[in-house]
Length: 280
Length: 309
Ligand SMILES: Nc1ncnc2c1ncn2[C@@H]1O[C@H](COP(=O)(O)OP(=O)(O)OP(=O)(O)O)[C@@H](O)[C@H]1O
Ligand SMILES: [Mg+2]
Image 1 (cartoon, rainbow over the protein chains, first blue to last red):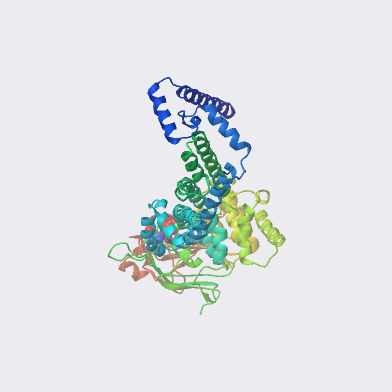
Image 2: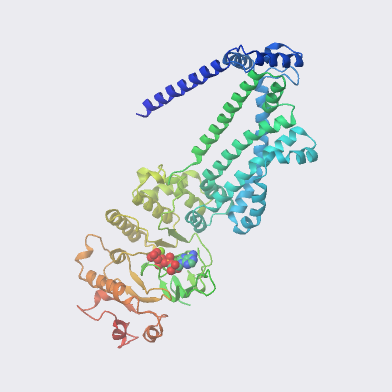
């Protein structure tokens, strides 16, 4: 039953993709329209570079060639403006990883504290409520000014955007631990550290991991924009750079890669979530 | 002081009110005691404060007045000396059955090795008939099995006293019977001191040496203490054949249905001394005897009329 459905779904997915490719191919067929060609030619002249980059939206085959080209050698490094996709991804992932890790280090203990104490919860709440809706990129100028390093600023932006969902979910998860379990720990005179790690943490883990998953999703959204802004390295910079080169196939390739890696990250957290989820 | 193992004196609990005016005390003037090795059940209508009393005994909740003294020391917080079986079993779902019991055992004896802990836990899990399920997660167990794990966990730390809050309340009659038998067996073998809340009159008669009857709240009090005078070697199957059984049962039901609400107000205070609630032995009374009688040294001839009004 379920297998048959999976098979059917895969078939439909494949058909959808085929239809999409077909439509794309049709839409990018070379056009006779002179006005468009004229404009393109003019633009090409203006750019003063090879005409191959200016013949409209790239057809699937051309994008496919970009895929093959980049994926066949993902780790080459020919100077600051020409690095393999693997290297660019690694830079982005390193920033996200570092910023995320810092956020975990701050959000988990703080969330624990806030979750355990209704007083602190109330005291911290106004700040969290005000800081949470701020677009992380709005912090960029302040970060650049005070940290004086574009790479560190990128990490800071990831930190600041990942911290809120984690902090809030940890606090809620900890606050919502069943009274009974706490009471069991109390009647057993369990010391605070054992209680935190063996009772509260596992009890709140599913909620905490949900927060982490949301944080990671946001971090991956934000890193592209942040890297476009600060430049240098990373997948966001790659997209911006290829756009400046008007190399649309490469941009499309990068966009798809961002999606694939984002999905991978989400799947990792999905798996972790499954690992700590308990059935009652 | 008294020589009793556990003494409850003038216990009172008032929950703070949300609004302006103060709440009436849930219960007040609660006096009773438990001796070592005694099995005491407490019965009363819903909301009279049984769970609150148990939580105070466990040290999980603070009383508003009075005190609890166990083994010569005042109860001021939770302690490994008192094992609690919670109504909702309260097993940690992310640990296995063994893990749940081991968590308790390691809390009591932190320097035990892994093998010793496992052996100890297994022994107690086998005692409640769960030797085959020790590596399962609580979610894979039936309600009755979960409750048995809770009982094994409480027994495994060998507390001086066991507190049970309606441990079988959520179980079907059949399972309940089986576990009652098991508990009876274990208690008879270990001479464990037990304080247990129940709503089930038959359960109380089967298990208890002494049944504490609570009047309705607010201002709940101990109305009387019923001694179960049947021999300790009871079984669920045989208990009905004892002529005492129905006398005790009728007495309890009569209390719950007719008399439990008559203990509030000034009029009641005239005949009822909360400090020394009457101790009755309905099982030994003659057929159709008066429902309430006081111990010989405290005769109160008018009592029955007042109570029955
Ligand atoms: N945390 C609380 N805050 C305020 N009132 C409470 C609280 N806990 C219990 N009460 C009140 O105290 C009274 C006694 O509650 P308790 O749970 O001890 O009753 P109980 O005898 O165990 O009832 P049941 O048989 O239904 O379990 C109830 O009237 C209840 O409303
Ligand atoms: Mg209760």
